[in-house]
Image (cartoon, rainbow, N blue to C red):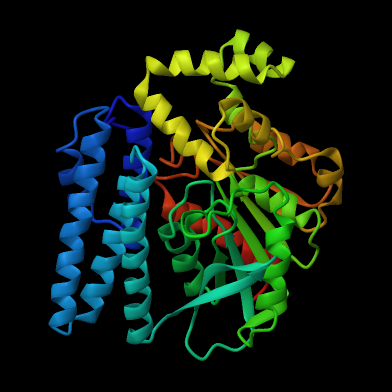
Length: 399
């Protein structure tokens, strides 16, 4: 595919933005016009131009609302939310990230409210009891639905709330599913508004979520599936190893060891310092190295924040806790679908590794370069991805 940017992060994000057009969370012309204004590797321009496009769509959405054109307004709010989310990718301070993230969330909530008002889909905001607080989330359903198959969507480490729509709800609703998602610890509002960091034992999130949703009249407790995207490809297998009310699970892609995405970038001598447990030396060496790469320093700080740490050493040590043990793998009972895209950037080879380690019924589903479906989470093939995953779910959780 023609590369728009030499910067790998920019290129991957643009592929995701173009793929979002399939579910009307972007418009191709808006994407191309935005990236035409961004020099390669210019993080400030990335933030300002995506924000400007989001602001323009938000203004058009308000104009449509004022004119009573609620379908157009909802569509524009969805695209605005998506563009604001793109802008957060390169925000260089917590304050800048939070400001743009709030605009993204407000735009999505406006999309949800207007969509519900139109009446074809109801998007309900929920609060799920969790320890001594609650986790915010959404239920996507057809109006008047009785107990139906329910698909729980688990987002990735940095996925926006728009992903719940484009990567799960839009397609699943058309097949008669009720869809539920929450911001787990370290994700979206749980991080930004509540300050809750990641945790590796995702059953602590999935179990109270299931306890909550099985009481709903539009949820069939015997037909619940779970889909994990990106780092959710670790969290979902971990959770279903301990929570057995799930009829089927999807990992896109399969992740056995989250830390591999981080440690694979370390030079050999830093591996040795990390393994030796020398926190002071590791942080000092990382600090010196990152002085020469401010973009990488910003990106790493962004990656560290959901883990609730500020030390580079603590970040890498914490990430190593996000690994599936032999006991976890042996405890998974439900059928599992694992996507296996060509050119997986973050966890190459781990989908096959997870499939080989499971003793439950497992399907390893390839997505290829020839299909235009390569890359992490198949960003440019949302149609094919949704068709294959939901066909598999139809076979394992009948309507």
